[in-house]
Image (cartoon, rainbow, N blue to C red; front, side, top):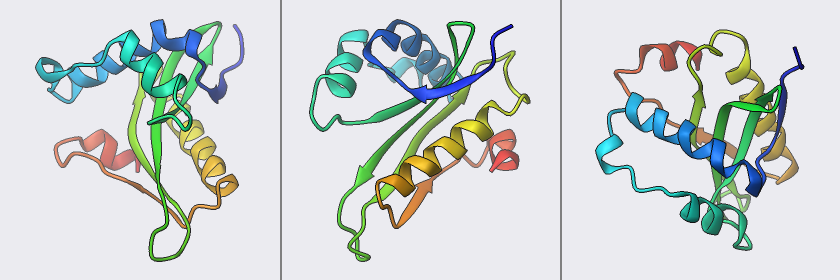
Length: 134
């Protein structure tokens, strides 16, 4: 078994990222409105400078087991950007193994490198496991 690795997503991850994003949409009950495609992911996340979003992934044995999507909001009242964590998802079967904690630790390091004043995120009121995690 290969050790879990947290890294920045690359464009070749898109075929594995999209199913994870769909799973999250099903979990959060917005699958009917889910409009993301591989093409959209490629354009918005990897072919624009700066990209519309950034993504960290958890990878084990070449398989993506989790993702964390974030973006920056520039020049807040602190004259520092804020980071917004939009999505954090760990695939079923890989939960309760520290994957989410490692993704959050990695995004905190990204925020520090970017000179962010704060990191913001939300969790749905009904998501008891998410609330417990945070």
